Image 1 (tube, rainbow, N blue to C red):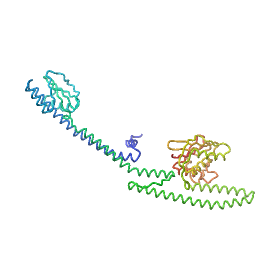
Image 2: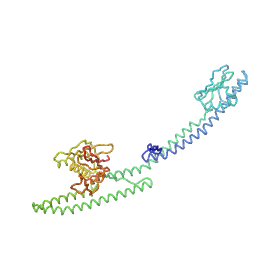
Image 3: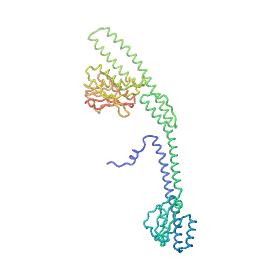
Image 4: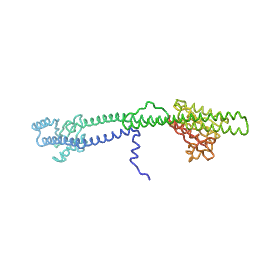
Length: 445
């Protein structure tokens, strides 16, 4: 039984990039703090002030009710109401004989209703129903008395704290300024890390990054400098290996050429043919050794039409395959930067292996999102899923009926995978729709 994990759910909605996550780390506490401050202001301060202001207005209204209730209609009451209106800054009108204020309240200003209820109940009980309404910058108040209706027009700022809107504006403006500053700061801090990731990815794909320089925070500079040192060591190792193997190739091929010449001068014979076969096998083995050890060194990247390269490799294989077993399927036009000979060697090895053990071979070039896939299918005996990774081991020959390196030294698939990985891609073996083995080269575009 799986339990619901809230942290896992939160991870799903969090940004995946460093910039987004850093921004969340900075902005979230700031917004929480402002939320707490806003709550404290409005609930503990703003609401209390509004209640006090409304209670003051309610006390003023209670005074006016006392005037109307205790003084009969006449000049004296009118003078008292006029004086109170001037002192309180209210508009006061008394409609004698009206009895139309309902006891069910639909007040515009709830603070005024609560405050007046509190004051009226304390002084008069619930005998005076009232109704508050909105009139722009004013609040209208109607109070039902025994003699009639007391109508007042009160400035809204006398009932509601006016600093709320200013406070909200300052909070919103300060939040936007802080977020903008955080974005600019984080952008400058994250950019060196992005450049380092780009340089590492480009180097992994075999592309040169000559203009990469360490900058940013101290830790980022150290990581970038370590990457540069590592890249220099790898490039020096590849160059030394390539130069050494070029010398080995020259030293070994020279005596082999002399032996071949001597056998050619010896004529034909029962002893000559096996020796010539051994020499051809030695040359083939030497070529495989050099191809495997050379890897990605010694060749520059160039922009190539991948569909054209695949077609060219297939055409070369067809010249050796006179039975018409090789066909091409979908060929999506894709132009990308690759090491042409290295990738062609990879495809040649895969096609040769497929032709060696299958009666029908199909080659296709497909586009899958941000990857391009080269597929080589055959209908041969295939390789069990548990042993497919074993087939990539250098100098390793499978004991099954299908031995991908039969007649070689066990380097065909190793060379092909190295070429794919040198381009930042991968070579995997899968079940083929034809019933045999599928070799799939996946390269990032």
